[in-house]
Length: 293
Image 1 (tube, rainbow, N blue to C red):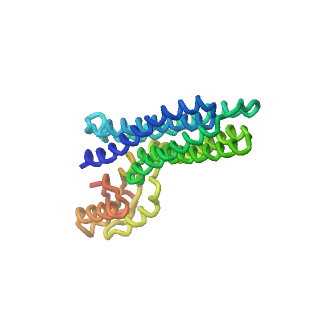
Image 2: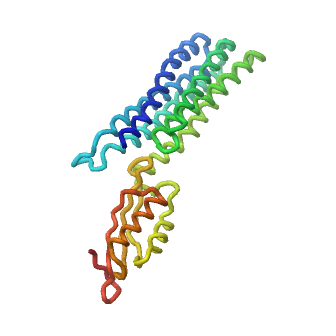
Image 3: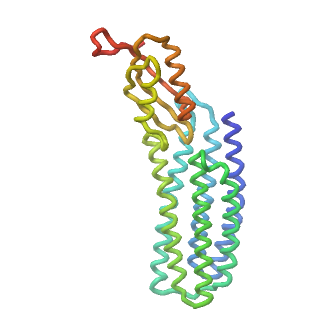
């Protein structure tokens, strides 16, 4: 079943990668021919899209490998490493774009605005198509979400390039080209920050977004027979794969298997936490120490 899900996510990535790669070549040639930094900046962002899509697709293939005695969780974390690498690649592209834009501010060259507009419109169409392909899968997987952010950011960059081309075509104000390049760079920084932060949170084994540790503890302590929950930890192995470990102090008035089964059912139904390790304990006679089963 996991392999079927991987295949369903891998196919959209492969298709979006093929579409984006073909157009990247067109945009680079067009940017050189028209002497447009905005178009070349957009091509740079599209190259990062290609790297992101390729890395995401590769991560999916690796994540299909079964768990081993050394990697007991399998290779799921490869997806998160790919997401983090995608975000850092975007930051590198921003540095290159900003450096080139600063140079053009002091000596803006003439740009063939009409050709720039035509190519940017084609790029916008390509990114919309790629975004549509990835949309269905990006909500439940950080790896696909990272690729989706790349594509949407590039679509907005193409729109900005069209605006710059129209301004230069109508007014001859060639500073619009580096101005839009700065806009595209800022857009890349904005869209990549969330991706890097979420990837880092998973690698740091932070509590997954949307799950409150205090709420989980309160709900588990509300299970009949449970006195207290302590040493509670919740983290994500990868997108949508949550793990929990905890110690549960029980009063011994109820069958321990029923108590454990109810806690596991609640965790699965409310939080989609299916990988749990719960150590059951009872109070000592003095009520100060716990003894484990």
